[in-house]
Image 1 (cartoon, rainbow, N blue to C red):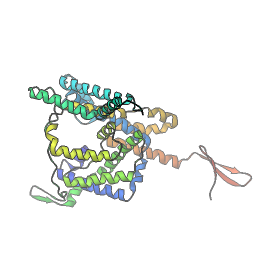
Image 2 (tube, rainbow, N blue to C red; image 1 turned 45 degrees about the horizontal axis):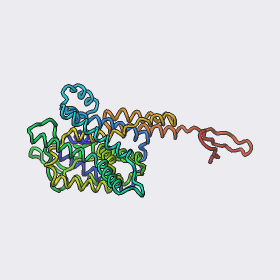
Image 3 (cartoon, rainbow, N blue to C red; image 1 turned 60 degrees about the vertical axis):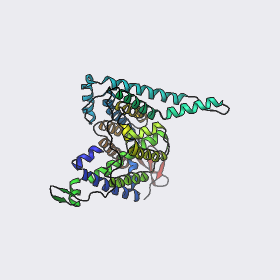
Image 4 (cartoon, rainbow, N blue to C red; image 1 turned 90 degrees about the vertical axis):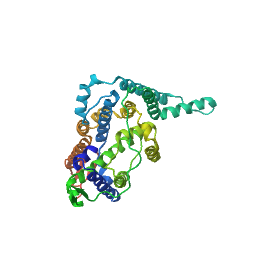
Length: 391
């Protein structure tokens, strides 16, 4: 999303904030008018392909931090090339720490999945042990980050710098103010209409891609965790986020696959997880930002990789091959194009799904035969029951 915003705003911060405001208004209007049903056309193959492709792209994007590589581009194909090209420049400290964090996370996850459950009559000491293990394994991501930060701080005190650190983080919240409806450039005032003209087609593309990506992420995790989503609520949520964010100088946002996967892996099951996350973010911005300086990027990369890895699943291809081979087409289109850009993969995958759907409607597999006893035409579906023709 940030790359799309940069393209349509030419890197102008004022245009980006105004675009967030306008995107929020459009998305809120769609939600209030109950246009969420339009997003129901995102088919199951598109969702599964997006999920697997996003797991690959997001996971691989963290390899540079895991190995301590620098100057790696964001585009996936170039990223792969540059990563392998710069393998001889790996920082040993980052690589060792990163792989140790991954091993620790996997061990704790395995322990959580295979630790015996509590049952009635179990001795109190065993119950206490279970609670300790459950808390430790559930909070494994936070434990890894804090432990890695302490290790990095210890080396920093000794004057050693084996890891690439997160560095200084801006403290506090931006000033609450109206979005810029005009701006001054070279002693000339650019009006609201001129700013909208500068944004151009981004005024429609950014809200659309934000909605598609957010709903695709929501459906991916709804399918994994067996719950249903309300697309109108998703429209209202993302619209309100962009609308309010513009008053704090934010640019347009959408759902984050990596952070959603991390939230899911941590064990969040209700919207209360979002409230807690928001509170912790505000608290951290106000009081904890100096501590973020010492968090190694390799540890954060390990947490993200372990969070998105379970989302990679190509077993659906076998199911689609058995049930309906034609559905492999939108799956492959979405999966392959997502390595170019996630947004384009989703959009073109949806278009291919709609073409297949429209073709099946326009060319239904039916047969019309004459009933010689009642002199009526009977329409027979080759895949269903017979129905009398309606004149």
